[in-house]
Length: 158
Ligand code: ROI
Image 1 (spheres, rainbow, N blue to C red):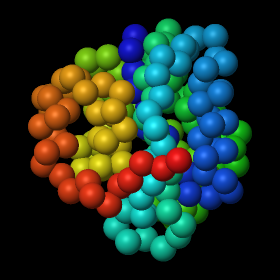
Image 2: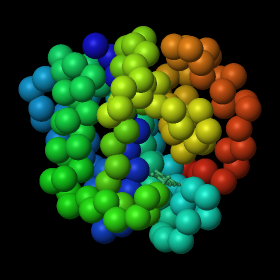
Image 3: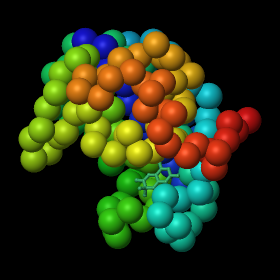
Image 4: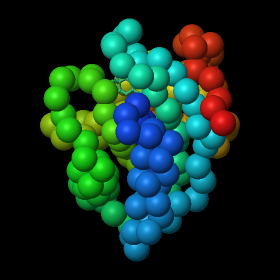
């Protein structure tokens, strides 16, 4: 199955944290890393206090089910000492399953497409960079979604 994962970090060397998580994704025998976007920098959403974020989106091919992919992503987060303190607080690493093939899922643990992705330029811009022609289940062409949101506060980094 093809899947897209959004990665974000604003603590403890964000670039290093994201590179480490990408390495974990690429080294797992059930997943192949197919492409990775540039790094993008933005302020924390909703004017939350904290350092700027770096975000990337990657495309993988995986034999894992959506739920096992979620478990794997959370294992990577735990390995990088992610601590869940306040909701929407700073984090060393965050991995969000954005899309899993054309699957639509709404369970307690996992909603796909990721429910917030359509509002987040730090997800849509890197996704557009690696897959400009993408059509999302339920939500339609990525290009149309990007045109609806303000994205000037997200910039390419490095
Ligand atoms: N803000 C930005 N800019 N990037 C993120 O990845 C990000 N992730 C989050 C919250 C805390 C909502 N804010 C973010 O989870």
